[in-house]
Image 1 (cartoon, rainbow over the protein chains, first blue to last red):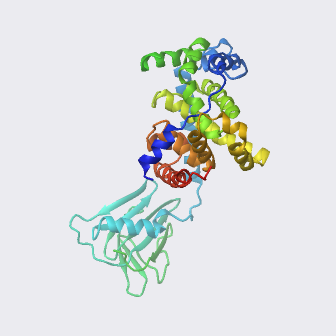
Image 2 (image 1 turned 180 degrees about the vertical axis):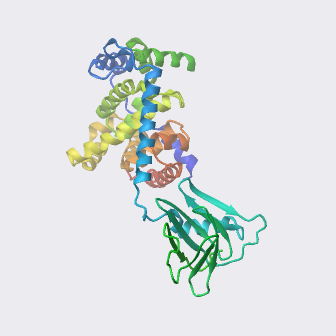
Image 3 (image 1 turned 30 degrees about the vertical axis):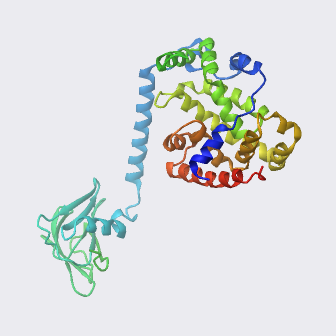
Length: 199
Length: 182
């Protein structure tokens, strides 16, 4: 039996009909019970429903409350909470989208931003994670050996040292993961090699 | 009933508490709703109750009807979902749902009450389907809804509807092909 044959059989089938007076009396039986149900808004106790302005004001207040709550969570989040850049998936997908063009993925208080080379000349290398905190303000970046990133008010050249370590050369500071001593006490620096490039 | 404009007018009047307008809407759509309810429940008594309950719920939810779909589609959605919940509730309460369905199929009084043997066999076959598959067949075949419309009514994906219709058809073909079934 094919679908057309089945449909023909199904559509020929008739349903059992209710008693003859069912159709005549149903509408009035339904409306007769409506008193026990919530009436549409404009009928409720004779009061008009909330005006458009009132509904808009409530919606705006709710939205403002949500924004305030999100901001509170953001500012109160622990400073050592794992950041988005630690996600290998994010890095892999970004590199796949822009092969040999990603100079850095930077995260700061404004969110994520992407720094791309115009010429597709970023060589394959292991992604390097760098995080610099200047007091309460932190910025992170995933970049590659030889690239430059602007973090905490300084331009840094990021280098892999061939032994899995990282060197950061700033305009005012030289930092190495092998000897992570902060010459400048107000900066806290963290860096690690994230492994083989996935490009 | 006249065209869509008249129906829209009746819906707006019903929202404002005009019971006479709502009765006209009921009169226009009661047979369609009853048909859904009967095919879903297989019971005349349940179908009558479900039809009444559908319109009561529809009145309660009139404010949520935005006109994005046809009024009949919106009503059908309420009806089908009521039927699905009704079935689950009745099955839990009585615990003899399947046995009752079997008895209804073979009881002489029930058999005589069907318009004809084909109708009885088709309804028996529909009752054997899982409720979600039955709902998909009722909406797409009997109410001529697209898979997309049925998916919205049943709050699932279009792919799920397509699968349910396919699975239901396979079973119905098997059951209705062999006269000894049902």
